[in-house]
Image (cartoon, rainbow over all chains, first blue to last red; front, side, top):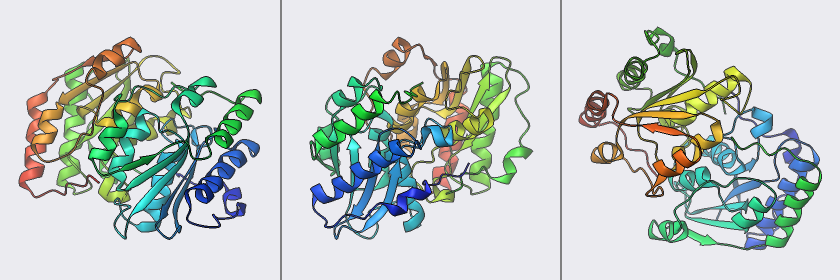
Length: 179
Length: 179
């Protein structure tokens, strides 16, 4: 299988600064474009270094790849690993994963293996569930688990903007592809 | 990124029957061969239909792909999705995922999205941790969570054989690639 970003990704302007809001704005624009281009679910992700340099990008590719694994976070880890030629994305300095929504159980489990030092999320689990997606079962204290492992978690950055993309997808009759 | 099984995989004889022991024996032989050929960690997986037909195969490809995502279970889901041309591996009838070890937190989260109806595992978490791998943090009652979702779990099938492969990997100085 080839895991490949849609060609339109390069047309989205990169973050204008390394601030959480600017990077998240970029990620939400990716999610919005993924719905507009009908290339997958209403989710996107970027992994950036401390200078705001983009190490990897992900959009939801479950429909595109016909494979349940390729949530936005997973695609971003795959894309960043390709660019870094390493399974440890923290190898050249601290890396932060920005996701348009809180990670599901799979992505929650995957993120600590990727070597990122911090995650920033927009929509909450409850927002994702509200449009019919399943987030799976995570340890109730997963944020504390992350912190004990040295991964900081920041929530609710541009949450309303991300929720608007989720709602637009649901209203457009977007596919719910959970097993 | 291209996710591709090592070429030696086709040289391993397929399961001789659909029994749990025969399918697991095949999976453990894949894990053993993955170590012998130095193509990755000491883990393998197969997804089969009720007649014992192999829908997808996975071996650990973290080193090969330089990407932390590609544990054996994830590779098997990718491989089976490719063959089935569907993100729902249960689309043509019940499918069972056999893994040489209990799934880590990531794979535990991924399996319900794949549409398999049952999992069978050999080595336990404690066996995997004993050689230095991290399994992450799963809900304590993940097996009950699976059962409530209609996914049956069978453990300890050829556990000793799987543990022998884990130990051989550790004794050979195999890489521990957790983030």
